[in-house]
Length: 73
Image 1 (cartoon, rainbow, N blue to C red):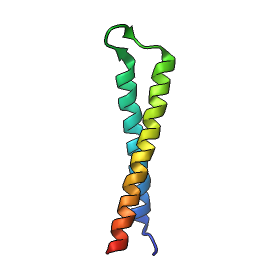
Image 2 (cartoon, rainbow, N blue to C red; image 1 turned 90 degrees about the vertical axis):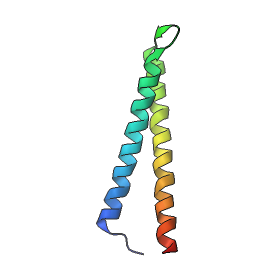
Image 3 (spheres, rainbow, N blue to C red; image 1 turned 45 degrees about the vertical axis):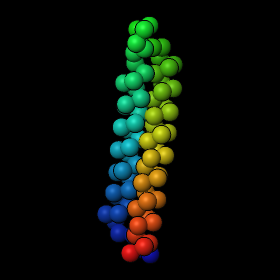
Image 4 (cartoon, rainbow, N blue to C red; image 1 turned 120 degrees about the horizontal axis):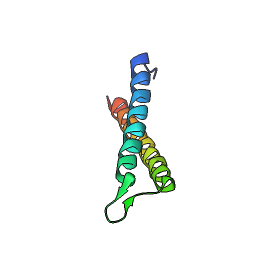
């Protein structure tokens, strides 16, 4: 099965979108702790890193889903 250029580009755009979005959301959630005020930079960086990893995992799951659906057709 040969992939078209648009499918490959779409997969990489999806990967970048999910990684960036999840990292940004994690950054926003980690910035302030409700009771204690601003969080430390280490906590913010760690949350951002884990958010990016979660985004990569989501993008990988969606890419595999698209591949499976394409195989069924």
